[in-house]
Image 1 (cartoon, rainbow, N blue to C red):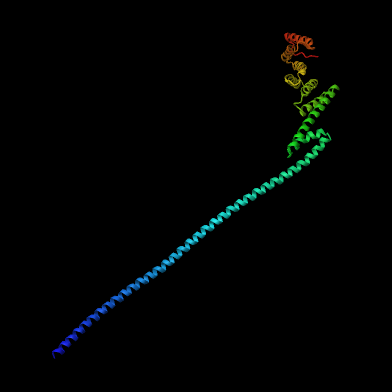
Image 2: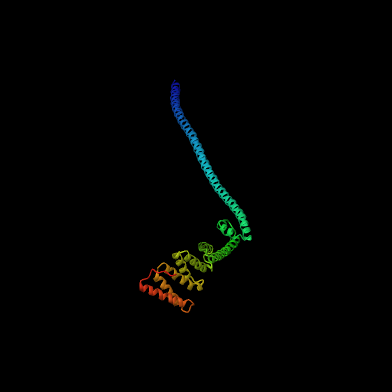
Amino acid sequence: MREVDEEIREIKKEIIESRGLIIKTNNLTNALAADIKSIAKRQAGYERRFVWNSWIAYILFASLSFVGLWLATNYRIAEIEGEKERLDADLAEVRRELNEASAQAERRARAETAAAQFYRLIRERRRTEVVERWPELRREQLTRAEGAFFRDTVDRFHLDLSLEAYQHGLDLMRTGRYAEAAEALQEAIRLKEEAAHIPRVKYELARALMRLSRQPEARVLAQQVVDQTIDRELQDDALLLYAAASEDLEDIDQARNALRTFLRRWPRAAEAVSVRRHLADLNRRVMRGQVGARRE
């Protein structure tokens, strides 16, 4: 009986221990379940963060790729536009040079035609037309050789025409046609103002103007002949002409000064005796107050 009680106690004890183990096991199971739930929640959160991070990374990568592609495209577009502008500028420069070359070729062709016509006038010795057309032709695009040849020819024709006009003026002077002679002599001066014969032309023109009662102009020309050094042989005659013009203008002081200068510079000239007499006559007239008297 005692053994049965002990077994019953043992059985109770085992039951109590089993119950404790069951409770512990249940608690551990609950704790494990809670841990599993917590781990599951953390895993779900990690997975959500991973998905979001993946999307963010994808969007960031796509954005960076788009920005990079946009920058590269803009750079290429700018490069192409710059190249296009450079090509446009080169094209405009080429067109400008082409237009200039075309215009230059046209000017040269026009100059060649004008030069050929001008040369024909030279060969035909149509000197007046050559001289008249030269100012227009010289503006054309002539070569250096053409320009030099035509310039020398025109200068020679100027001289020839000036000499012809001078000779024509002398012929008119001999026939008493002083107005026409003055025009011819003025034309001779205009044609070749710095030629060697121009002092003589001016002297003859002064004589013609004296005949036309244009003493002021005659005196100016006579003074120019006196001052020039190209033809010194004319200076004495020009000085006497200056004195005569001054006397006609009743400028007796200038006339006397001119006569004194003549006697001082050419005391042994053929006219010296008559000049001394006339100077003495002028001095007497001045002393008498006859400053308005004119020579016959």
